[in-house]
Length: 201
Image 1: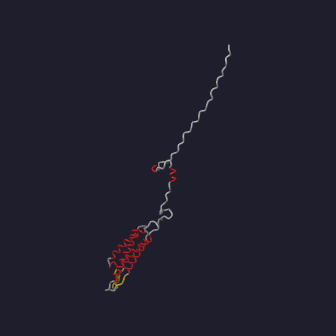
Image 2: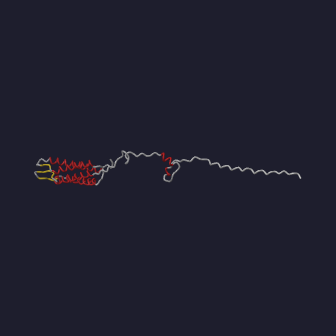
Image 3: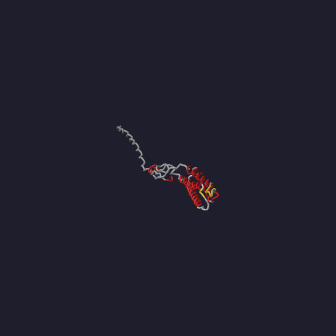
């Protein structure tokens, strides 16, 4: 028989490794402005950058704690209050002491003139205002009340001094009561000057 050719089997094809997957395309990270309505609900995109760029508010002039600011005035009104009490005492004492001496006979302010009733009312107002000031009250109204009381007292006292000097038919002289009334009016004005009504200085 004729010889047969032996055919070698073909080698198996070489395996090709699979290609690596390509990375997904990169997109820019969104940056959104800070939403004022979202404050307190959590961080939002761009909130840190917006907060860092926000200007820091500058304290207004006059704010407590900043240089050149107003300072709280903690000084009390004890001097004005005590002077007010002294003024009231002087006026009340002057009303019941002699305002004039007629032919050697002393006449008190209570008996000599109806102005004494007005002066007692003024002294009562000064007493109340002075008590409030001693307690630490501060008010422009209280200061004005002291000033008006002092002016009224001085005005009435000066008017009555003129009346005493106008008596010609009798031998009259000025009594110590009117002098005390005038002194009380002057002290009330001084108390008004020393009274503080502002909270800051």
